[in-house]
Image (cartoon, rainbow, N blue to C red; front, top):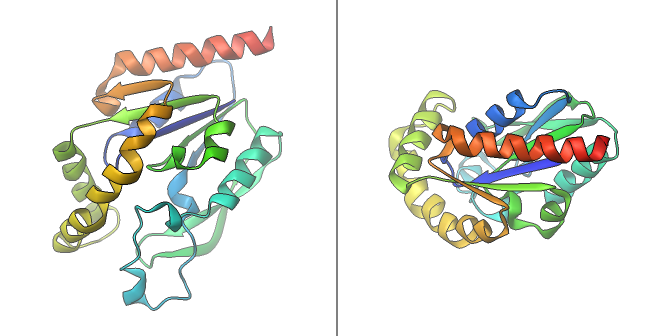
Length: 205
């Protein structure tokens, strides 16, 4: 069973995904992050890598993502790539993801590919106000990725915001469940967990 969770950058989708994964009882759970599936831009000079539009669907290796989701759904383990957000390249390391009863995957453009939408048994869109998303992104990029504030704001205005409106927001129509207020909406998260538990019970029965 594959649970897809999407939403804008900083919406709280990773928090929702983590809480869902932690709350599923009586089943094994594996977690994937779509950010691991950026294309490898190691062939570009560092300055050119910084200009890549990371919020456009073309930045992702969709074929590898679909292949690994299908492998997991078939009960086979995969080697998930590890992306280095400081150098903007795919590292030489991988993380082994074993097959599980439930696969939870999150990413900003997850529903942008019809193949991924078809694979997901439950599709969740996490919604949050634009100012909240921006503040969360600033904290993350400074604290976790070592980026200067000016670069973060320039990227937000030039690509993140327009790409959200063009590619992320329209995928809300594919969602089975829409979660307002992100990871703080415990009622919605409990509803998602209850639905997953019902589907798991139905399959085991």
